[in-house]
Image (cartoon, rainbow, N blue to C red; front, side):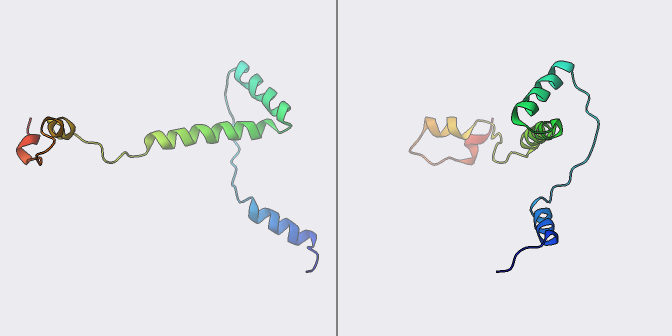
Length: 98
């Protein structure tokens, strides 16, 4: 197997890290930024890395909370309550009218 050239290594490295970053200005309270700066210093990474992780975590929580939930609905009386009253009998459509 042949040695990789610098150009090959750069291309390989670029293909692995296909993340697009956008620069922006962040407004935050001084205590919050001080905490994040300290975390960045402790880990030996730039503040931008810690801020990016915080933004990604917040975006993930928003996506999760806004995802549609299926299978939740109301039937009037409630299938669980009706089936609990007569567990050996099949449910009838009249059981679901409030």
